[in-house]
Image (cartoon, rainbow, N blue to C red):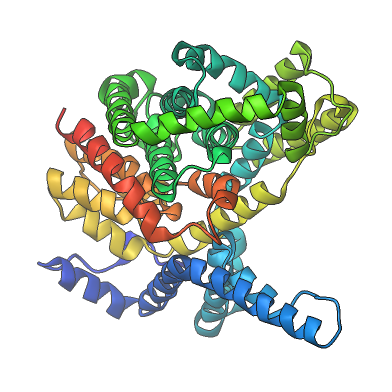
Length: 481
């Protein structure tokens, strides 16, 4: 074999049918079926993660009852902790990467497995998301973003509905300039503070989460450097920001407006009721105490001071450096180390630097690219065999089960695509980026930050339902306009 994974151009000539082509490729490289089978199992695991989480709570409850019956203090159950670990969506692909490592070692040898995991797979995107998410979730950046968005929210009298509309329309479009992971982090944190903490109903929670995921996925298409699926094709296909803005950007803005407007009309009465509840809370709890309570909940101590402009400016510079060096891990990781030192020196203006969520998201994405790198044998023929409309729909569908950046990257390997087909692939990939947690790289960040507002865990089918209408409207904005 000439390499692992086998280069796509080394397979026999395509057969007359797609099924025939895939059969030939499995015959030429039987491990294709093994790798895809493990990937499918990992995807199924993500859909059952909520059940593991519920089972973990039940096992721990029974264990606590037995401890009390025996006169012992409750302690964590090993089985419950194991089940809880299996219920963490962020670790699913990493766990199944271990199975993949064993399978490659057994069939191809340790040298090949080591070379693939350590040399072939590119972890730059995962590392970048860890750093940009950690920077975007800092107190100075959130204060800056909140102040900027509050100018617009005040036009709606600062109600939860006004914040909801502002965050879900303006926030995702910022992803075209500060990157989608940063936009997702800021939007999720602001939604947590101004919306989810008011305990809306479950349907509205999932509608909001699905809308956030879809809007962030399409909101990064105004430029050629901020959205991972666009980054994969911009250089090979010669797309610049002017091209993105004129061909994709205005359609993305239209899709965001249509989707947000539709859900606003659908849930208007409940959003208004949340506004009434906010007023009751403000009467019962003075503003200064509420602010102190909110700071405590986000890790700020009682001696925290207002954030000076110069601290905000330096944080923005760290984010700008990270975006500018996004393709060079040594540079943006080095910058992050300097940031940690700066955060320590300015601790009185900072909240605690919490790396748990960014590291989990990075682990999720690393596992995803490990599996995704072995799926080209079937994705490339599927994309190359379709015309414009079926290609758009197939790209949207495949994105739900693969990171959309992987879909667009594999499209660059398909020879002789005309401009309409290239556009259809990218439009479909970003349109389907909100249907599942794994569909778009920033989605795990949103899940990690907002998952605490959902009982046990975010249910994949409910998320799919919440994202379905925005996906249809975004697709209409891209494909029909």
